[in-house]
Length: 389
Image (cartoon, rainbow, N blue to C red):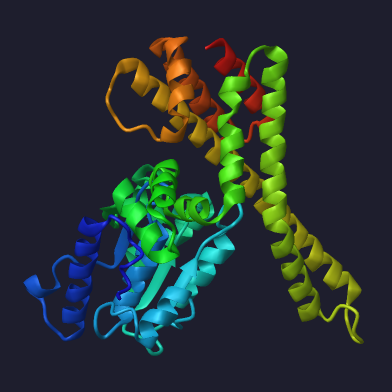
């Protein structure tokens, strides 16, 4: 067991991080030169969604604190991975952006010396969501770090981080995990049979979290099946509009269901902290705090809804990708192998040019939703484009 176990199919990246950890340990021993080569104060870890960027950042932080360079069993490893280590700060957001106030608090902690660990490690899991002001504030701290401060930024691509920051970081790129590696991980960790593990690994397209959800939750698999029925149901304009509405409502319902329990727990914790309903409570201050929390929860629900829609669009793109594979006789393995007959029939009555136009329509819809176009309008335009080809 080690801190690197959750990084599926990322052996080259793990090797780089392990050498950096060894270099950091050599630096602490007072060595220099070749012994410390490869270690730097700022890292930028990029990779496609689900490739394990955050896991890599946490594992790196844990290994830096560990006397055995990442054993996975000591107190330093366990607390760093869980976010409980006093010298490892993990920042992520469930909102649309990371605000400057959050980064300033992180910078304040970064300036401190480690209290019990070897390094002060700051892991920003959503560096692509930094506001302009937050990025400006972070830049100065990365330019002038403390002697034992290490920054680890995570983002989907290097272009998602402002040039002034990324130019001061060492880049580490994660790859899309291979399907066999993901399937093996699912069988080993969840105990599912090989057939289900293979299906989940293929359908997730390298997204580890998505693969786990597909492997252990039949409801998730059913939702995906309904999404993949959309292309086969687009027979006229009415069907297009109906399909768009169903996709939008399903995403809203799933996001609402995911948020309900979290929202209630957060509200109860806030009211308890404010002393709501007890003697001495200040109703006006409590009302303002509750209102601020509700606004944050609405923003988070909006992001979750967009994430659900984007996942559905990615699944549809994979379906049309399979259609194109059949039409061009590419010989590649189908992502949706369980729909082989339907895919072949669809491929026979359409052309590769139509399939490419449909994939472009899906990509345009993803971009429109990311740019805050009303989801239903974007989906209606998309389904009409899919029907027309």
